[in-house]
Image 1 (cartoon, protein in one colour):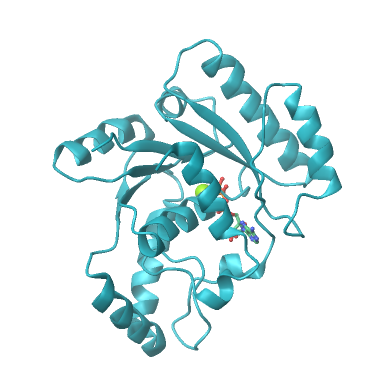
Image 2: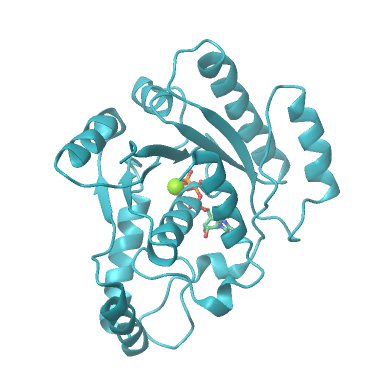
Length: 252
Ligand SMILES: Nc1ncnc2c1ncn2[C@@H]1O[C@H](COP(=O)(O)OP(=O)(O)OP(=O)(O)O)[C@@H](O)[C@H]1O
Ligand SMILES: [Mg+2]
């Protein structure tokens, strides 16, 4: 079996969609496409993935509709939910390796990393990734911040050879249409001059990205660490297309 691929959605900009993308892509790969995954929650202040998992456990326990959806799904799926390990950035690489040495066989390990690139542990962790995807939005401040981050990783790490990183790509997130807008295309041309490149697929801006289930009611879930995204909500999201494009790049 080939080695697990280490992947991070990373940027210094808070709120660009790192934890959301990590969860959506990990859950889609695991629950829809049957690819083994593990997730390392290295966000030592917010513990986002862990918070998502606890939320998901709570709502699926309390809400009869979700409870039924869980039962139906797991009767067929016959595997446990993927592991989310909460770990400090300085330990994350080692803990992921241990997880694999213990006999777990994820094809992809996702690392949810906080924004800062000033701290050594985070920089070292990013350098240990095989692939880094940088979420970028068209909001001016966020856009500049993601480009600075990607450029920094590219110049300071990749071109100096001080890293495992085999691929670095930006991902347009929170876009109002399913295609790149004119602004995305203009920025793509600008970042190409820096040696940077974005994925063809963009993720649309939509309230469904926050749909993670409530304790009451029957609105489907889109972002869950326990269930696949609801089929009706998948429509128009570009998530399947995004996962397909990522799989080609990371060769999984
Ligand atoms: N495509 C999208 N459409 C609508 N909302 C989105 C989309 N992507 C992310 N969001 C929302 O944006 C907010 C920030 O996302 P998220 O927490 O994933 O960012 P982050 O980069 O992990 O932030 P942090 O740096 O604080 O860890 C969340 O409320 C999330 O639900
Ligand atoms: Mg986050």
